[in-house]
Image (cartoon, rainbow, N blue to C red):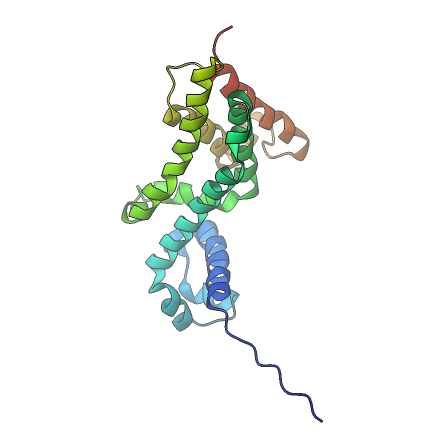
Amino acid sequence: MSEQPVVRQRDPERTREDLLTVATEAFAESGFSGTRVDEIAERTRTTKRMIYYYFGGKEQLYMAVLERAYRSIREAEQALHVGDLEPVEALRRLAELTYDHHLAHTDFIRLVSIENIHRGNFIRRLDSLRELNQPALGVLDGVLERGRADGSLRDDVDALDVHLVISSYCFFQVANQYTFGYLFDRDLLAADRRDHYRAMIGDVVVGWVGAAR
């Protein structure tokens, strides 16, 4: 009895994710203008027609890449379950998580930099990102509220202030690694310095937001 041939089932979600992964790398490397859909099709061993089928066009693909990149950091924050931690420790862990995530997802930093070069032209079309990013402030709001209640955190700092400080520091480590490294002969991404830089942002946030004793 002969074996029946294996019939591979098409997995649209897997195909879409594969396309987004490669598109993320391509847009981060070459920017929106410098990336060709044909190149993405070649790298994914698919067709330009298939990409247009899933996303509608180059702009829609780029915006899907942006949304996926922001969703990744928001999901990581939610997975931390900061409600189980004391407020001060929760702030430190959120800062450290952001540092680790940015170093592990350098494409995200490049995409954000590219989008700012374009003056936010594409992100302004993504109303979904406003809703997607609200949990980031919600998580911080919850931590700050608990800290104010137990007296461990000051009451004159809001969630957006804290988010700004954490994001600025962590973004800088990746976005400015080459210029900073050349000017000061210091590798911001050196493996033997990462624990030091991770602890720095935790200390900065806790030292700033912590209630005076």
